[in-house]
Image (cartoon, rainbow, N blue to C red; front, side, top):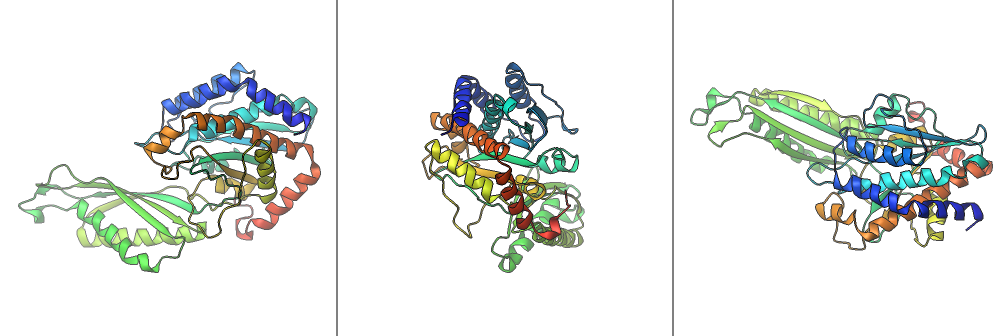
Length: 399
């Protein structure tokens, strides 16, 4: 490890207690998307304590923020991305307290060296990754217009430490069916909103044999009536859609909408439909992934490339990876292969000593990778050329 990276490591180690306190504060106060006020307060307090100015709200989002550390002159602009929203009913079952802490530690750790380099680094708080597409909103509001490269990590499990893992395109559709209440002894006097919703589920299931390998539609009923002897006048449901590309997601959206229209026609219920912004498929930048891999292995964590063809989840960092070179690599916080993300067991794992170690080592690896970008114009040229060739032409200029 060279002298500069050793200094990053020492700086982050000096902040260890504060960083782990931050991780546990966020973990112990889970907040769903666009409601992460306490998380932003915790992060802002840490940054201000270490001498940074924090802009919040950022780009019109109450639970977004940005802090910047400028170097000795103009140059590359590198951002660390923080997530801190929790899952409804689960808490931090995706370990976003760790993502936030790694981003904060990386930013603060590298900031100590910025007087020696041209360019600037920033930390951008990106709310509502679990639903709401906070990064997409930030993109549309110009939140990444002053950024050239974006780095973040994500917790994983089962001892799997991955670089270069992609992600599918995704979106969420919210549907509320409005019917008419009636006594169940005379159902013809009412309009059954629950029946309309069930009909949508059944239609989707009938179409599954036509799905492509990467397609997935999963739905839940959030509200479907109050008593068995009352015809439900309201039914609320939610559908999660995934596919290989944003273009394919648009097809699946039209499919679900056509199912809803047929259910309306057959039952007489009226539907309100809200489609969230589309999470794009991910384009991990290979040169940046290689650098992160090398840095993490220097810190004692071996990294591997993913198995081709696996069905992976989604993140709004995919949209960022279309606009600019980005990484979103994975560090395991538990060796237990039975613990799955998006579960309460995983939420518990996100506050263990093993997770705490990843908070520190992940921060170091991200900061060292950002240093690689700042320090070498040849490396930046490799990154930029790969990104230019990687992102499909139809997406150029989208953000």
